[in-house]
Image (cartoon, rainbow, N blue to C red; front, side):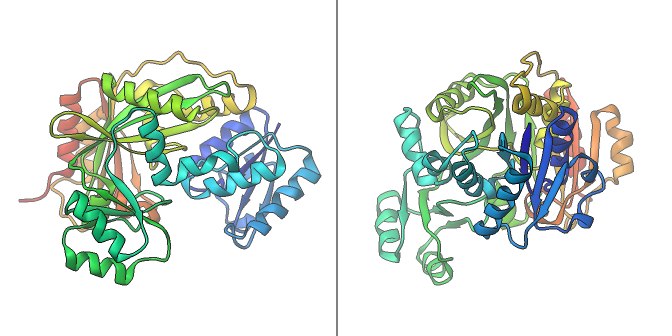
Length: 387
């Protein structure tokens, strides 16, 4: 089986997907911008072949790379990056080379927030009011309808990049003076915590794994205000999260891929759909899947890709939390002290790659425990600041 993996070295923990494919006997064909010698040592042995391009944003280069592999190895059976940034590129390459998966005719609804909103409404799901705005006058018209504050975000964006909360006319004027030359959607501001519904489907569209998470802060607030963050997984997914998540799952008819759906939990306890992401949740969340259920989600994904034989035999045994620290804070406890105090609850800790540090912190910890109260004691211990 021929599998093309775009940017297989990034993020670092996603090398495990390439390893799992290799272990299942697939030819793993990598495409990225790095010279082969710059690839992680862990990745090189599991790549059957590698094609270095100068710029992955140059679609002609990407076409030549896929054509090279097709000529050398035959038809490509699967192409993926598991990365939000390359979803359009993936869809175009699948379309041009007739590779199974999401193609150009369906990708837009999964990338543009304005189109997602239309699909949510079609599925009978509550959404924040929103409108794509191009001019200051259009923005003012929308704000007269919903009032300040509003959130301005790229209609097709990744995470909280270039996303802003606008609270008055001065901030609005400043936004348009510095606005990137890309389409923006304005949304009414919804106050609430982020909850998610995350999982993996097989090639027939069957849900084979799911879980959900609660975030201490939204990514926009963490990035724009330079806060530290934690988030933890449910053992029992709230019924309304699962119900809304399954409505979205069916509306988008997902097959053979990960998903990450985000909602706001408002003060009155209701849910408002935020957005869909047709890839694994970011950071170390796939590792949290594993720690939460004592599974190997990397192997499960590779089983789906190569054989579509994915085990659904799992239990959410633990609540699992990711806790990020930022160097700008003066924390009460060292990592050695945390290891001693948390004991077996601490299952992983390491430095965070620079590109993720604004959202995930400079150093991250993963802790788990069957009891949420016990887990949160460890979370707060890690985030405790010196007096």
